[in-house]
Length: 343
Ligand code: DOR
Ligand code: ZN
Image (cartoon, rainbow, N blue to C red; front, side):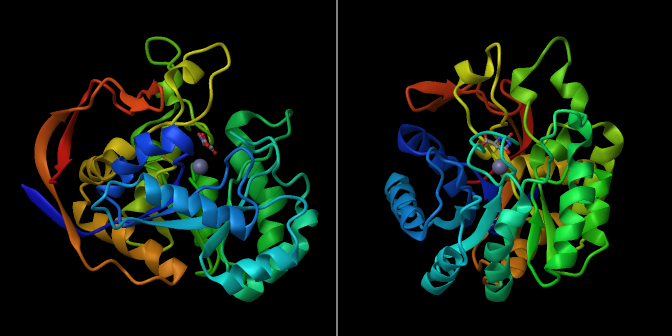
């Protein structure tokens, strides 16, 4: 069996920098035409000039024959001015701005401490049609880690959507029924990305047979009832839900340690993992809209015109891949996947 799709794009991706970037970028470029590149470097990508320089480093790291296009984002801070947004919009290569609540996840220390600090920037983004990409989790220590998305929606996102009714917002890596309901209850300026790992795993994966650091990500995996809602949203054919892997490589020793980093690496087999999730849901015919059409439409970019072909063939996922001078353990390491991208 074969499946041919318009070439997909990844609307949420971490590729890091330096030697790690060189290790991972080919995995994404072999499947996807474009990807929205997350700005959570150290220091974060907060200006158009930093984004252009990062874009050049990504292009330089690509295999010679690749025409993969990185789509750059800025990292929103308490000090992002309307001028920075206006300049980015005028220059044209910044596609979105990422909101990390300070302390929510990897390299989020420079994130927004109080959303009111961002009103001017958000106003300018709304005026320019520049999307806000949201890591939708509160950071309050008294909020249960499994409730952080729901509480963020109630406290921050609903009021934000009321204050900026035309602002384009992507609820990144949605993980809960509450997140899906939020997206469904708003107009078409509000959408969500869904990761392959949140479609394929529930929170049991973190504890199966012992603590599994490579199944730890943020937002953390949720219970099965939420996963079922994510599958329903992904295969619904609703253009508000589209592919964003949140593939987030960390060196093995930073995961298998006393205080392990959050992030699941899926770029090695992203489209194959989504194909598996859609096939399990009996909805392979819905994969193309989700993976290749709806994200481009939301961002106002042309759909890709070339195609990729997946074959129904078993293949073993390697135990690890190189990551700079270390290794990264990919999702389903050592297991068998049953869809394979034809080279
Ligand atoms: O699991 C995650 N890893 N979630 C994030 O929000 C950030 C990402 C990373 O950069 O490692
Ligand atoms: Zn991310």
